[in-house]
Image (cartoon, rainbow, N blue to C red; front, top):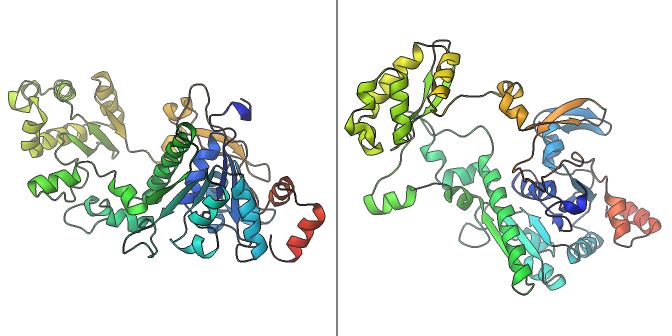
Length: 403
């Protein structure tokens, strides 16, 4: 597919983000054809370049995460504390459709890159602003990472077991959720601009609100019944049965038989026709009242069989079930492979490796990895040349510490 055929072809994005939320937001746009220019500090770059497992490259060591998080982006080094750096940023914004930033509120304004300044330059601009607590409110100026958003947004409180302190998910899920909301908001704002007069707007995403928005029935259950959802381990509260079970060969499986017909099929499959035909268990409300009994029955059945047997029986009965996958499991799983969720790529030294496939899968205009995360400032000269700077001017900017 040519670049012009991609769904976001022609959309220009300027990213001022670092680490996770902002860069992941613009990564999504880049995967579907948007032209993303990532602004990085000269000599330093995005700290993500040095996070987690590093791989030797021609310019030192680079995070394997970086190659994925910055795929399809152009890296431009720009000193935003220098007046000429701000002037270049203004030129980039003047031709952009979207700006993505995830600094603490007020930082962009101090740099001369706040909404009022940028919208004056480009009235059709969409500005995605991701921050811990949003652009307004008493906590707006406070720093906030994904872990804080997960805590304040309610996710951490309900995660783990009742007899232990709350635990975190093993990834920065709060940042990633916020990034998804940011990308969705950007596309909605572009749609508004397209059909309702061309005006741009701010997409204000607070990390805690991004998590809070995913919390299902938490709010109305408390407001109507005074019910506070607590930690329930591996059980889905109020939805029975849905739990983790351990097999005879020590594997951990999830079995989700909480649909009425699915529960009946599972009970028949494990030889418990009495429970399958029990009228009290025909609906979730009745099953939830007898959750301990039901989980005891399923636990006893699972622990008597190996994982392969359990998965064969549940598949034949059309009951949702799965092993809890490690990344090693993913690499040999036929479903992952059939869906091309492990995408072959090459490191700068030519070594082959796999990166995550692109989501979602569009039938006519799928996303694509055009290149991996670039070297720091790899596209500075080409982008500045496109903006009209001569080679001599670029040499002068570099000598002055602007780029």
